[in-house]
Length: 384
Ligand code: ADP
Ligand code: MG
Image 1 (cartoon, rainbow, N blue to C red):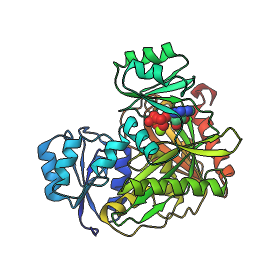
Image 2: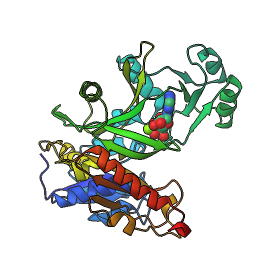
Image 3: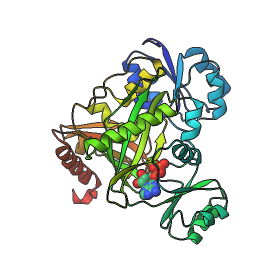
Image 4: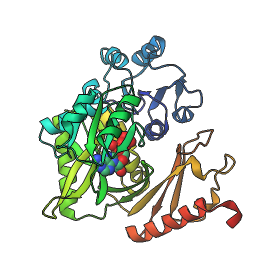
């Protein structure tokens, strides 16, 4: 067990790292953050910020020397840096799980080979793979690059073979997956933590609404039957065990109807870290997903994931900043809303700048008040 008073290392200093760092510091740990951005959101909360590239040998040596263990907050830290660190200190999650989560080809193959439910997909390494997939995959479909996609980036909806080929070519023939566009009833996600001893604990299922490929709102608990929620948690926990995962893992699901009208959960993708859809846990659960990440990293017993209050989380994208300023009063005047800002200096459209979580006696009340705040924020300023 790595006890409070020890120093933890973090590769990546974005908002997820910031919330991890805040949780760790609250519990009495020191945190050293490595991130090349001098204004890294996590650095504000860190004991020390090594403003360096993830390949930087000096920074890596510092982590190995000063930290009891290291974690990451994004799926793409360089594999060789992780391998070097792992020779000196525990790195959680491990390189194998990251390698699967960062590559849609490996990820989908892993789901299918291990019997986890997944929608129709084909691996595309060449244009002939697209031709061969037609039949098994019907249009409309989505072509996704295997690597470096997020928030709907690296994806194109395609309605014909020609369009699929053109997109593949425009992306310089990098490996892709072609997925059938599914009629989604709902999207839900499960955030869980697994310890090195195999202990697993998952948070209540969140229901996710997207806008322009980016998460817009998470409603927790999800408005699905207890049976489906249990299934989602069960599949996620089995997946984490199969991966021999250590740390916090998020599993995104599609809820679809099969040909007999029966509801079915399909895994969309996994994220080897806390997840945007788990932010509600900070304000609505006994233990947050970030505290759980600290506990998993340090080998501590897990905290209760019990949700004490229904909640709706809404992302604050740069779009609602006017002249680089957010009208925070719109959120602060609602007594049941909790404001979280990530300390990013520049507001850009589509950039995640913060979020707010509205708590309520039930999800519908929280949802209505979250919507009201959202409408106020998106109203053109001359209408106010
Ligand atoms: P990202 O890495 O950007 O989160 P996802 O694969 O999760 O990529 O896709 C983003 C969103 O696009 C999903 O949450 C969902 O709303 C939509 N989407 C992705 N794949 C499909 C699909 N096969 N059918 C229907 N909608 C999809
Ligand atoms: Mg996703």
